[in-house]
Structures are given as structure tokens and as C-alpha cells.
Length: 442
Ligand code: PEP
Ligand code: MN
Image (cartoon, protein in one colour):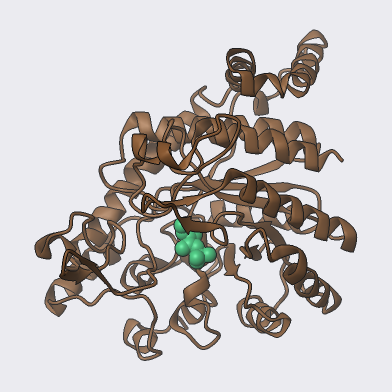
């Protein structure tokens, strides 16, 4: 039985908005409860099967998108650019890994953010912290920063619009393999950074030409499977979209294909673990550097008691300086216990710092170093480095420093658009894909 909302809140749920008007919350929840599903149970089951292949070492997961989507960001250009860079990365990774790449966007639902502080003070004025467009607005005024439950309904509609566009793109010709490869060769030819990856792009070119020469033209050359994901954070929203699937009688959170529990809300007896343990979607849990092997084992037995492969993904986010020390014991003990889990590396959240200019940023080299540490640890243990989870955008923003374009701290102000964490820009994302490709082919 799915616990009711009051029972979840009674667990002292972390990171929830304080809504001033309970009647308005009830109205928003009532509206969401009758809204049609955004995803279907069968699609979630397909993704579970694909992640089961990741768990077995037979596929690689690419999960990426904004730290925080915004309502204003639901435009054709923005969604298309994000999708394009993810598809470009996926082709490079597929070739290098020689296994299917499972493509999951941090999109169509990634609107709620956990924060380290409830408040924000500017020039002596203290207001509630921005918790994502799902909760309040970014603008620093008392009206905008007050949590408004109607925004949850807006999340639903924005997610529907995004997902509709993504579905049209990936089945309507935009994901055509030749086309995606052409974008990659454009990148390789048109920039000095791209030229470093000429050899790999050339190999892919020859593979495609060979396939064409023998007359191979499978459906998979023209369309891809793409899935949505977000952090399941605001209980009102996730609970209202949890439905019993008429086909199987099982509950699914139909707000997205894959949902995860964040580092700040993974308490074993907490509301988020309690809600997600009841749904049948594939789910993830973020594991930071303080996670003990016992924590991980307890989470696995609570969230995946039947030890079903593909059901559970551990997304580790240790930081470049800690992964080589911290990850081995975790992987060793979880593996020794026979726990079926996909291991995915989030090289972003352990590597955030504040630049002298005050911008939150990340170093491209730290991101690469954490992924390299993740691969090295898994290779040493004989386990499979199952994928990467990254914050990125298809646009040429200036939010993370370094990379081939050698973006400096002084450049951050040029185009810093994230309302939350700094994302890799288009070129940095493609570079990451080519560098991870080299790690996959070692
Ligand atoms: C995030 O993925 O944006 C996030 C807040 O991550 P974490 O829970 O790992 O800090
Ligand atoms: Mn983030």
C-alpha cells in the first residue's frame, strides 16, 4: 500500500517547501491527481530492462541535462540543443563502449532543488532560498520567493510540453544516426579542440560507411529510445503522480521514467525512501563521500528487497579528490553482498566551488579526474563502470572553468545562465564524451 501524504510528512520529510496556504496545496494536489500520466508503466519497465543490462556490464548509461530546468527554458531551441548534445555524446560512447548506451535526460521534470540553507540573505534582506521553479521563483522579492503550490501544476504542463517535443524529435528523424554523426564531424573539423578527436570520429565514419555499403539500414539508425528523469523531491507532486498501473496492478510514479533520491534526502526511514520503495520505476540514489557500505546495503535492501537487476542505480558523487579512497570499499562490500546495482558516476556534485568572482563553478579537469577515478576503481575491482550522470546544456554558456577552450574564472560572467549549479557547455560536454570514450576503450 502506498503511504498517504500525511504519513510521509510525519516522517519529517527533508527539503520540503513551507507553503503558506494549505488550501491552495490541496487544490494543486487535487488537480495533479486527475492529470493524465506523463509516462507509461510499460516504458518504465523497458528502462528497467535496459538498466539491468548496465548492471550486467552489457550497456552504458548516459544521464544528463540541467541542474534545474526552468519554465522559461521550455522552448524548442533549448530542448533541441540539449537533446542534440546528448545524442552526439551517445554516438561517441556507443562506438567506444561497443555496447548500447541507455539515454536518459535530466529533463521533463527536473524543477525542484534541495538547498543547503533554507534562506538567502542579500544586502541585509533575508528571503526563502530559491528551491527551483517547482517551488518558487528565482527573482529575489518576497512575492516570488514565497512557495506557491500552483507551480506544481506548471511543472506538470512544462514537463508534458518538453516530453512531447523530445518524443517527436527522437522518433521523427532528428535522431538519425548519420545526422548525429555529421554534427560530430562538424565539431571535430571546425574547432581546434575537436581536432584532437579526429581519429575516433574517423573510425565512426568508416563504420557507418561500411554499414551503408553492405545495405544495412535498420530502424535503429533512424530513431532512438530516450527516457526522462528527475530528482523525486517535492512529495505533493510525486505522490499525486503515483498511480496504480491497470495492466499489472503495481504503483508507478508517472511523472518520469526514472526518478532518484538526492544526497540530502536518502535517510533510510525518511519520506523519500518510503515513497520510492513502493513504486516500480527504475530508481537511483545519490551516494556522497560520507556513505558507509552499511548505508548502501541498507538502502539496497529497503529499495530493492527482491534484488531485481535494473531497479536500483547507485549514483556516486564523491569529488575528484575522494573517489579513489572512498569508492573501493563501497563497491567491494556491495558486490560481495551480491547486491544487483548499476554503478553510475556523477562527477559534478562533489566538485563545486565558489570562484573569486562569487560564481558557483566546477573545473573541467576535476570532472574528468573523478570519472577517471571511477573507471580506475571499477577496473581494479573487476566491476563495471556503468555510466555517467552529468549537468550539461547544449548552449555555449560559461559556467564551468577549463576544458579545451580554457574558460577562465574571469569569463564566467559572460554567459552564466544556470539558476542553480554550473553546467558543462556544448563543447565541454562533447569533449567529456570523447575523453570517456578513451577510458571505455582502454
Ligand atoms: C543534483 O543532482 O542536482 C543534486 C542536488 O545532487 P545531490 O543530491 O547529489 O547533491
Ligand atoms: Mn545540481
